[in-house]
Length: 296
Image 1 (tube, one colour):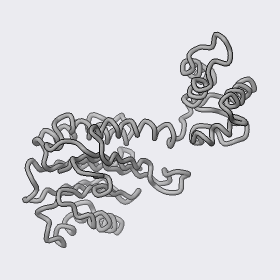
Image 2 (cartoon, helix red, strand yellow):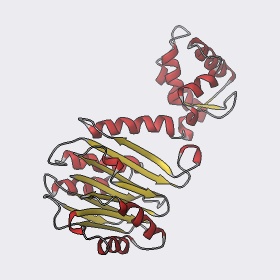
Image 3 (cartoon, one colour):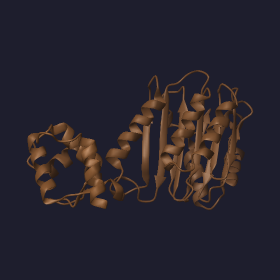
Image 4 (cartoon, one colour):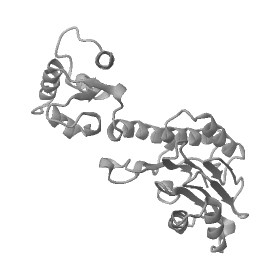
């Protein structure tokens, strides 16, 4: 009733799971991952205890194949289970029980395991695998989502669509650097769960991902005055008050007078506060120009 891909990033620093299903809140049952340890998807007649058991085995040094074999040996319901596991080194293993509903199967390669059950056919897993291999230049989370979307495009769950989830872990990648949750997004019940998951990932990138050097606009004295004026036009005492209220802390330098502001945040502030100076260029275009000038 589910299709998923479990993987490790090419640089060996991230692990993740992308999953979709005609099942309510699939993200609550299928995926689990710990940075530096590995990741697992447990599905079909999912044994959710496999998540903690598998990660504990991997943490003790078991490979993905050894961990999976241990899970199967200890579970009398193994023929009804399906799972994919990737360990710390990128070794992958996948299992499809003999009693899983057709079509059911999986495929593995260096750093990934793709699998599904109650699918329209093997083309779903084949499409996921192909998209994963072709997406090597994409950011890890978007590579996982791209593989999942390819599986859906190829047919996906033959019963329809309902939920999807994306989980990515990396050491220190969580909010404030205090845990490993780089991405933890879930669409629990939606007629188009994958487009909705993609929309949430865009928001995640804006609100919960730090700006790159290329996205940073240096704050000159003139721009600092503009930032405060625009924030005040929106009813805030100053620019940093607006930043805190709108949750843009990840994309503005931390200071009462920030050294830089993200190009997207600057464009949003300009668009929201209106044109304070006649003849001003489009907010996004102007912000990008200032960012380029600051890097020259």
